[in-house]
Length: 550
Image 1 (spheres, one colour):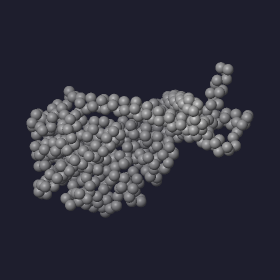
Image 2: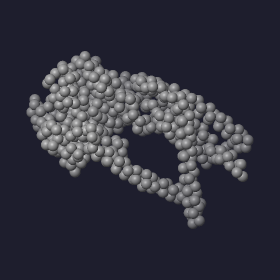
Image 3: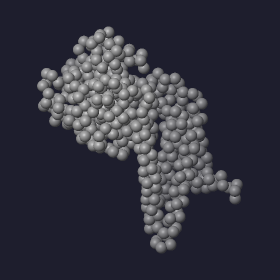
Image 4: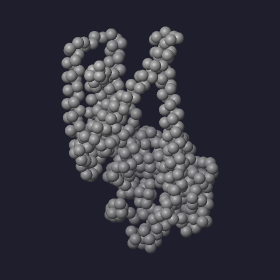
């Protein structure tokens, strides 16, 4: 009896499921947008194998339900053995190729090649993940059979099966929602909240009363949160700017940050931000930037410093925190809170700015990275400002659901690729990446200048739900300079690959994925702000400065 267990176990697997699962497994080993570690690749490949197996399993069930002919006897056994051999050959070949494919991504990002031994670890992790999925599926099936048998004592068999299925699904959903999601979110919220409150010893409270968070400030230093304190304290000094420019006329940039704990409501935080801007005389600067933070409250240092260097520090930046969670958690738990906060801040600042004499007020710009770009885009309606327009915006790494980005990409010129669109005549919106793509022959800027900085290797920007069943436009024709030439679209699998890429995008090298380098912001701000006296040679000098500092 015991000797027959391995045979029974092997026969319990679906041949069609194994074949389709192997194809999904093989496709998952091909490159996507970002390089993956052996652990991440193994988990992804195990999940892909499980997804393919499930499709094959239900396909076989449907085949039998329709009473179509099936293989029997010795011929069925031969087919199973042959299928197993085919699966081993396919899996082995793609595992062998996987290291070269990963290195094709690393090569375009100037990264060291990955180790040859990664193949074995990938295989072991994938097998473990698939085994876990099989055990989970069989446990669910056992629960379903037990529930159906209990119900069957009182109602007809087929109705008992349907009722059992509904009860098991409801039970599992309740457990996942109540235990995993609720408890997990509470733990994440507590963890991020403690991290946000962390007072780091190397971040000193400003002594200059003209700085936000100083003793005379309207904004409490501790209430700013960790991200806000770092943003204000690490602004470049007059010495930093003077050493680069060789001029003694530089001034320290003004930065205002209002944290979640600075006031109770969105409206109060927006009002506090405006009053602090007035207190430090921010409206007397030559430029004012409304920066919308990411979900964790971060305002990207690499985004703001290039503009501060180009304007000799004569710029003020204001940001108001709406979350301390990671961006995807912020979207999951409070999807509209960031947009509401961004809109309230914009409304209060814009109303005051609009009432100032046009010849005396600063240039007004917008900025946002990642979720900050999405919420910044949602903070104003173009029709509300067209009569007295803002001067422009630099948005980097916009999520794929960003309203203006979607519209401009969808309506791009036919000859331009989806990863670097050209929108209409280029007078309002332009796109750029690691190389300066903003100088469009024959195009003249209008009164408002909006620039999207995006990398073709950024999954946050180029993921889309339709990847599950449709080849993306950014893989048509010429592809981005930081995308592997071996990347190929596969139904369902590429969808899973980009989902796996998204959390890894922040670990990419500077200038790739979702990590935007300071030198790539320089051309964007130079085009939007058009700082006087900055020719190509000075821009190259500033780029070299940031590269050396990095």
